[in-house]
Amino acid sequence: MSFKSEVIPVFAHSVINKLITGEIIEQNDSTLICTSSGIFVVSGESSIDFLNDTILPIYEIKKQKNERFTLFSTSLEWDELLTNKTINEFKQYKRYSYFFNKHRYSSLELKELKDGFELRRFKESTINKSNEFNEAYVKEYWGSTERFLQHGFGYFISYKDKIVSESISIFASENYAEIDVATSSNFSGMGLASHVSAAFIKHCLEYDKVPRWDCDIHNVGSINLAQKLGFENPRMYSIFVKR
Image (cartoon, rainbow, N blue to C red; front, side, top):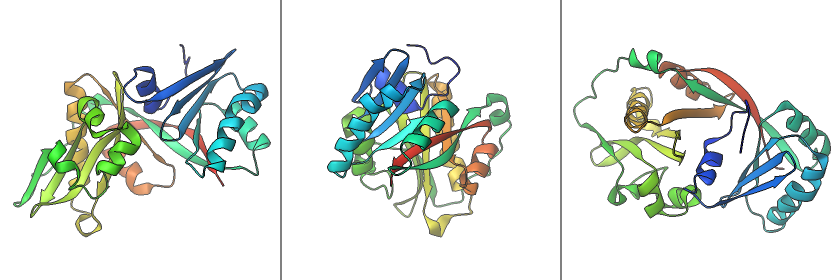
């Protein structure tokens, strides 16, 4: 399966590597990769037949069941087709996918954590202490805690035995890991997100995975943090969600 020059989201690689449950549907030169959590990516040749025969029937089922349907587009051609043919069904959002510059990251200097703050890796016993990335989150994207602990990873900073900042691989494959980051509002502005993100990146480098950073184009905080950590040259892409 060749993706040419397309930037394919990490969840698609994870399905291909069979690290999460999913499905790959191919028709001529068009491909749809599906996850069990309701996230999809369409790639290859933009085709009205593939849209009508494959994508929209899946969407209708999800719509009837009131389940999640989030479709990633990998090209302007697919953007145009989806916009023109599904204008009353989908809402379009723009996102950035960053490329990681290892050399820029290597020059990153972080201040030491203040007394009382501790950085640790997530284990089974600490996942349910998470504010954002708890068992429900892990099950939604990974299918099970066991699968996450086997193929994914995450780090957190605690203060007085409470998690105040955390990073996790929302998805991972044999070659990539996509980060998700969250910090409690009471502890924002302290540089904690930089520390948990740097721990995530260090883990990636130790295990020969390329860290990936994606975010909404209007998420200024995420954009600034990404650039600080060595991510650059963002490629803009679209996602389409149910109205």
